[in-house]
Amino acid sequence: MHHAGRRIHEAVVEAKAQAGPWLRRFLDVLLPRTCGTCGRMLGGADPHQFCGTCWQRITRIVPPLCPRCGIPYPAATVVPGEIGHVCGACRERRLYFQAVRCAGRYEGTLQTALQRFKFEERTSLARPLAELLVETFGLFFQRPAFDAIIPVPLHRRRLRQRGYDQAVLLARQVAALLDLPIWAGAIERVRYTQAQVGLSRQARRENVRGAFRVRRPERLAGARLLLIDDVVTTSSTVNECARAAFEAGAERLDVLAVARSM
Image 1: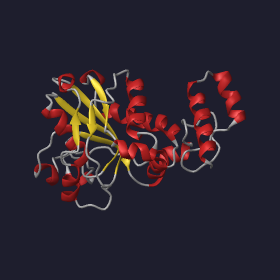
Image 2: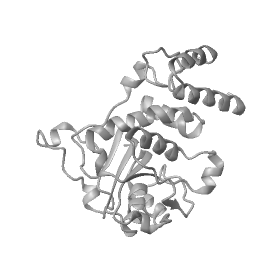
Image 3: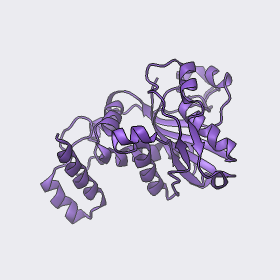
Image 4: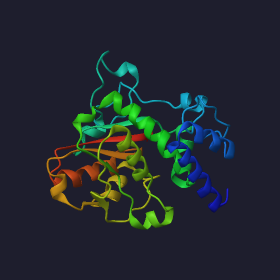
């Protein structure tokens, strides 16, 4: 789809999300909804931007898992009724976040959706992905436990290249659904880093070390924060964000991400 055409498509999809039932029917005639992953036409009963089949194919991450980084375990590795034990990687490093929870595995439907959302300007996918995050939030967290939502920041150079910050779009939707304030500029990325894909665990830690800074430390002092990201692999990026928040005086920081890359 041409760049301008994608913009028009996204504008109409966003209008549908905000419209009443009568206007939504008119917009469906003008531009029928299609699934964000397989592309099939959507019916009225389908989840927003996902067909029922693709939505069900998302492999959710549920216990047993590491209570800190959230990496899933085979069911046989924990005592029934327990969430899980702290994994070896978490025992070997200092963690500044309290817990990471991811909605699903970075594969299949979810991987396709995130790639289109992140690299193909399918910004209308922010809403259904945020709904998936809120579903996961309800399994592991409670809304009164947090003072604000913060997105993992994108460096301004990458923001210029992409044209939008996917974590900010997700965080806005999650904040609206949970009725929590969003502090989008509280943490900034001050150092441009290479992509984490293909790097070893240690290289990932070094790549993001010192990459984040809190703009207004007094705002974060004593705050309980929920950090929003799209994909988590080794937790190095979110841990470095949490370090900046912790050093600014935040009381605690938990992480909620769409997918976990295994």
